[in-house]
Every structure is written in structure tokens, then in C-alpha cells.
Length: 473
Image (cartoon, rainbow, N blue to C red):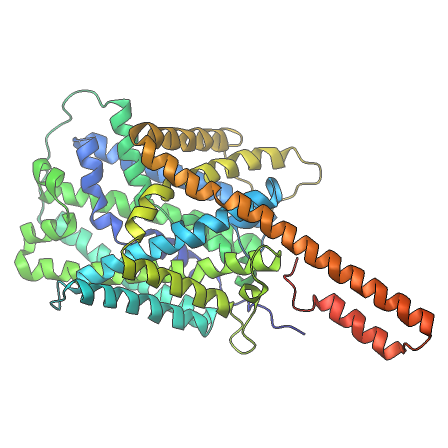
């Protein structure tokens, strides 16, 4: 019997994956992006509250889908079941070549750059540290989801504790300095700020990828999504309010390392240096969850016959999709080494909102399907999925209008997966038809000659049932 994935992720580990994946390094930089688009205290906090609410809307939709379809692959499975295998394939295609692997590379580079603030490193040294981070986390996840989720949980607890200390310090010494809002907020500016805020909340959906390694996934994953995203919203609001207590708004607008600048203003260089350690822990923890989750999608695609069958292999001892883990580590390291991750991610990452919008619309379709049952149901139906779908559309439209060439290039990279999908599908079908035809000819010949034995026929049937090394479906 082929080895299967191990169920060892509980509610604590799943919630830690949600929180740890969302809280990466962007919250220590992204507030400046938000403030430049909406330069007022009220506007900034409103953006973060709106981004948190929308993230929670999206998480509630994913929570319902994960309770209805608690299978490895998460979003890939949802898209495949609600729309078509081609739609699911495009998600996995974009994930491996750009979105998921590119985000791993980007966070790894943040990890390397902040390591260089502690130990002097040149550009090569930064890239080597980044690749080392990817390989270490991949090695941990190679040897088991249990150690992988344990590392994720430990890093999440450490980073949240450090952020709590940071918030207490800033609130303790800060005073309100930011001026009141100056005039109305333009819709376009607010939307631009909202996109920046939503980027800082990215990664909430990744816990769905490991459903078959989660205990009682129909209930555990929805609870983890709801608890984790709500917890992050509180953290982000507190942290952004704390920044504004100690830094004047003009400083916030120009800062590229806002947490570092806030601590410099209150505790001096020594305290500010501790921020580098916090960002290192946070980036490493964020990368840990992403490294853990991605291979599960590629494993599920291989199970469906949409990738090389080797990507669906499970390690006989560690019970992990080890080939998929290795493939992801190699490609992410290549993106770091060549420096191409930035150009790819910046063009493609917005397209995930097309898929998120599709999830919302698909949920509305599922609710009308006879016999549809889900242990968890998204609140506020149909308003919540409708609002979320409209916001996804607005984000995509804003990106296309703001930078049409880059946006269309990114969309083209994603859609390039369609001909690959149809060619692959045709190849798999042809292979199966040839094998089926060959099997029928052998059976006819055996029956005609009378030379076949029951044991030989049993062996042939066993090979056929196991797929004979062909991609599984």
C-alpha cells in the first residue's frame, strides 16, 4: 500500500499557520505605502480596518469551502470542483512558477537583507543567506509535517510575543502627534492604499492546502481561519496606531523601515537594532508557513494527473510530498539567485484576486446546488461573498488601469498555462488509451491461446489498478 500523508496538525498549529503566514515582514514596511496614499490618521486606520474586514470576508469563504471539500490542495481543489480542472490548473501553474515560489524568494531576500544589518554582507552574501533560509525550512518540511508545523508554531509564538512587547513600548512612551485628516479621501487613493494593506494580510488561504494532514479538517480549518485572521486584524491595528503615536505623519510618509524608525525615536539605536531581529524572526516564520503549504497543491495536482506523477510521491518514512518539497525549494532558490523574482511577482501577484473573486462567486453557486453540505457556513450570505467579489474586481481593475502593460503581461503569464494544460491533458488521455488498448489486446490473445493463468491476470489487474507509474487521477 502506498504511503499516505500524516494527520498531525491540530487547531493550535493550524491557527499558528494562519497567523504566522500573514504576519511576515510587510507590516514593518507596508504602513508607509498606505500612508502615502492616504496621508491622515483616520484614513490610515480606516484602510487597515477595511483590509482586515475584507481579509476576514475572504477567510470565511475559504472556511466554508474547506469544510465542504476538506482535501489536500485547498484553493486548487475548490476551483477545480466549482469551475473546471483547467481553472484549478491555472492556479497551481501560477503558484509554482510565480506567485508562491516568487513570494518565498521575496521573503527570503528580506530575511537576507535584515541579516546583513547584523552581520555585514554583500549582495552575494545576502542571496546565500536567502537561499540557505529556503533550504533549511524545506529540509525541515521534508522530514515531516509534524516538525514543520512545530517550527511554524514556535516561530509564530515568538514573533507575536515580540510584537506585543513592541506595541507596549510604543504605547508607553508615545504621544499622539499625527495631524487630523486634511480634506476628503479620494476613492482611487483609498483603493490604492487598500491594495497595499491587503498585501500585508496575504497568505490567509494557505492553511487550506494541508487539509488531509489536519485533524478533523472540516472544523479545525474554519476555526483556524476565523481565529487567526481576527487576531491579525487586532495586531495590525494596534501596531499601526503605535507607529502613529511616536512618529510625526511626515516621517511616516517617508519611512521605508517604519518599525525601525519608531524604535529609534523612542529607545535609541540599541532598541532599534532589536527590530532587525524581530523582522528576521517574522520573515523566517512567514516563509516557514509558505514553504510548508505549497507542495501540497503540487501533490494534489499530480494525484489528478495534472503534473508529473513523481510530484505526488509520499516519502515512505516521513509521509511528506518530498519530491514537491524539493522542486519548490529548487525553483525558489533559482528565483533568488537570478534576481528574477521581483519582476515576476510584481506582474503576477495581483491575479490571485481574480481567483479569490471566483471563489466568492463559486460559493454562491454551490449554495444553490442540491445536496450541498458544509460544516461551516460563511456569515452574511449573500452579502459577504458579493462584496468580496466586487472588491476583488475593483482591485484587478485598479491594477490594470494603473499599469496596463505590466498587468496584461502578468495575466498573459498566467493564461500561458492554458495551452500547457490542454496539451498535458491530451498527452495523459492518449497514454491511458494506449495502455487500455494494449491491455485489451493482451487479454484477447490470452483467451484465444488458452495460455493465460489466473495469477498472471491478477498481476495485470494489479498493475492496471495502481496506474503502472502513470500520472494518477
